Image (cartoon, rainbow over all chains, first blue to last red; front, side):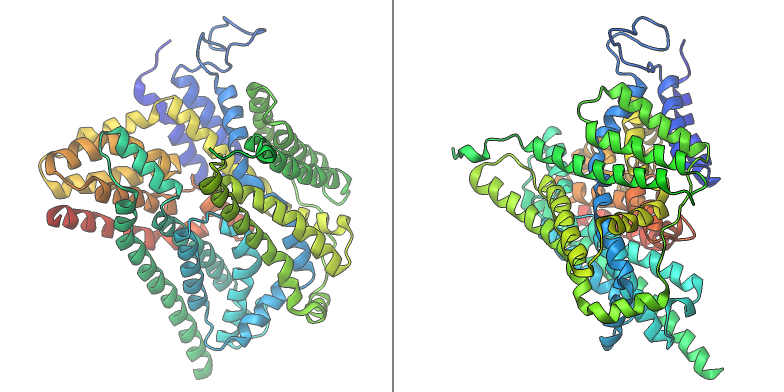
Amino acid sequence: MHFPVWLKLLGIVIVIIGLALKLRTTLVVVVAALVTGLLSGLPLFSEHSFISGIPFITKPGQEGIIDMLGRAFSDTRFVTLFIVTLPVVGLAERFGLQERSAMLIRRVSGATVGRLQIVYQMFRIAMGALGLRLNGHPVFVRPLVFPMSVGAAEKSLGVSGESEIPEKSIERIKAANAAGENYGNFYGQNLSLVQAGILLVFNTLKGLGYQVSLVSLVLFAIPIATLSLILGVIQFSLMDRFYRKKEANKTNA
Amino acid sequence: MHSFAFFAFDPKHLLEIVYVVTGLTLLIFAIMSFLDNKNPRRFGTGIFWLILAIIFVLGTVLPHWVTGLMVLAMAGIDGAGRIAKGDYNEPSKSTLLEHARRLGDKIFLPVLLIPIITILAAATFRLLNQFLNFSLDTNQGALVGLVVGSLIAMAICMGMTKSSPKLMMNEGRRLNDAMGTVTILPQLLASLGVVFTAAKVGDLIAGGITHVIPEHSLFLLVLANCLGMSMFTIIMGNSFAAFPVIATGVLAPLIIKPFGANPAMVAIITLTAGSSGTLITPMAANFNILPAALLNMKDQYGVIKFQLPYAATIWAAHVILMWLMIRWF
């Protein structure tokens, strides 16, 4: 059986609708994979000794969708290794890690939510430039940057305790924490000769017949990396303006 | 060639140990979930983490179709709503403050040890590679360091706080359950990307892009190149998957060749144009959705919404920068 080529895009439609409606994401993704694969004429299973020659279930010489899912899921286990950090972070939080982080930042004069994100973004760019790849969300953002940001916000708003900060502000702080990590990580990593992105570009160009030097790739990454920091400074400073306004309103009231 | 007898092991085994340790952590979470009678869905929750634990421990030796069926089972359990949070015996705010005063800044030590050991391991692997022709890549070094660092930090953290392993693992389970099944989303989406590639969805999109491209105006070509790169990244969730397709289909034949543009310059700008896509797509779950879960955000798309204006601005800057630089260089 043959389907029109564009029908393959149905999988993408399923993902978009599923995510927009906030359905169970895991199920949406698996269904999209099965639908895309089947509409493209891929079999469900690869040929194994006990199943072969059944129409739609297997097809000679083609990897099955379920085999593909298993292979990719197993090959990408490295993205989920952060699980092993959770017991330490959890236990440290039970013994006051977040409270201590907030106390620490309150002692730093001039510390604001925005400035903290800027410093963190710079730190991540520096790590990228040194060729160090690390998922900062579990090891830096959740245990350290977030509670420090809360401490800075408490100081700016003149309150004591996370519960006194409006929930909307807390959500915004959390979003900024994650964004600072992503900005620094994405645009900083191309400043190193050994990072995956630079090597990917180098190899792709080589395959297309263009021999470039790794150093020139890094040099041409500098303008955007610089701009990424400037834009981060602008966006995070705007957050601080919001806090100053809040404070001004409070003293006026 | 340098070669030392005690380095004569396959680096892949190191990574395998790392997966097993993670799997055993998940196994403990699973057992604790089964035993948590305050969790209304303890059986479904336990099975879910048990399956993931098995995939971590045995993923390399299991036939792929078995792992694939286990992945379907996890999605099924989650889809049927059989997963819930349990009871973690959380301390009160005043207890927390008391601990914070008693332990002081020492509490930072175990938490900071994890990234420090990770970075040291990555650097060590790099040096071994460079000077001993050791076939380990640095990313693997960081992964090994993350797990070794976590194990050392666990021991130090338990000693400092005089806590039992049970209390520590329960705290880990608290964070794990707070994130819920979002944990497996990055792996699932990467798998979806593999199916998309096998189904040639990418070629279809690239074909569509080249179809509508105006061939004569440099500015419109640059615009289409950056737009294609971001769109592709939004769908695949990964700019590294998008780059070879766009470079081969658009960048090289339509920009580098006819306009004599500097390949290194336009290529690296194209790559980071894709990052704007990464910043705004839920498909890049490990950067956008997982952190929202890790920080217990109310809105799972809160990170994406915050990044949207930044991504749009820097994307526009990419288009202008690439256009200007092709004209100047």
